Length: 188
Length: 201
Image (cartoon, rainbow over all chains, first blue to last red; front, side, top):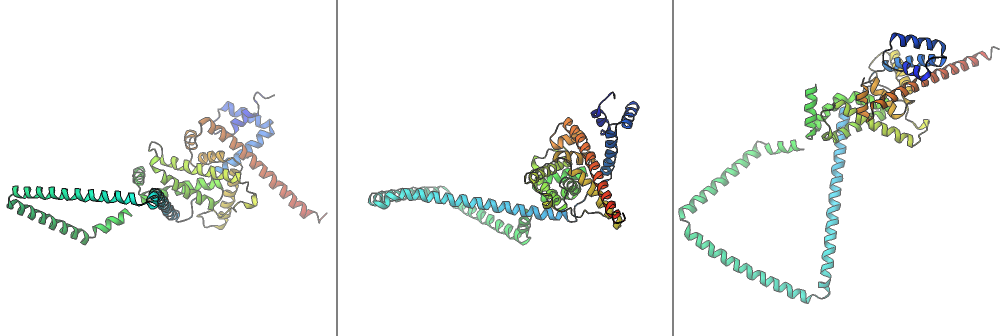
């Protein structure tokens, strides 16, 4: 009768850990008397040799290029999906808004007279308020015009004209050197 | 390379697809090999490897730089392949429906060594096919990438003791599969000899 059972020797056989001389001798003795473990040892040695001989498999040429194409397709699909979702939400929102407005406008369509009176009253009030605001603005402009000397007006006009010229020149230069298009390409 | 890799990862995290493409270029072979060893078919392996890189790119902001990038990448690929194998098993695909073993790339020009290489790859694949999905991933990481038990545990979300036990079980299964295959071959050879001899007697 062996000191240890099969699982003990199996663990020794299938382990990558180095065995001590005593353990190794013990295993060899067991292998001489146990056919099952002996066959397992032969089989495992063959399998291990096969595994160690196997090399890394490389993908066919152009893998990265194919990944770039696939990534671009995925990006476009995501973009399309986002656009579709936005569109659905916008159309849905607009439809909901029209529905609410329609429900609100329904009493007006049935009996329009009170509503028209309210609208006329609101418009009259609005135009009256606008006329008052314009009168206040005119009074203020006259007061400020009298306070500021004419030379300051001339100075402000010249400064504004200078700033306009600088802005136009900057825009022309930017468009001429093509900086705008390069920046757009990089963004894409 | 580590510096370049870190730079590419940082650029990819800022949305630079070209920088990530450099990482794809660098890691294509390890990721493809893992997928091929797991799935056993070059077409499926290509798809799985591409998908793994796409998922990695999508989740690049979640990458923790304390962990090696290769481990993170292989973890994504391994989990994807495990899912694919489980789906395949759930669909109960018959052997006839499985994709044929397509040609394996071998740079050696000698036809004999090409055949020998293919036979060797085919034998290894048959051994791997005898294992469960996770056991297969453990074996591939141990023998092809020389990962430690701790690294395998981290990559596959297992404990170290689970890795050891799975590796032991996988070795036993592969040895048994090899013995079974040898017996089958011996029986077939004996059958062939019998057919030849029968007219003589």
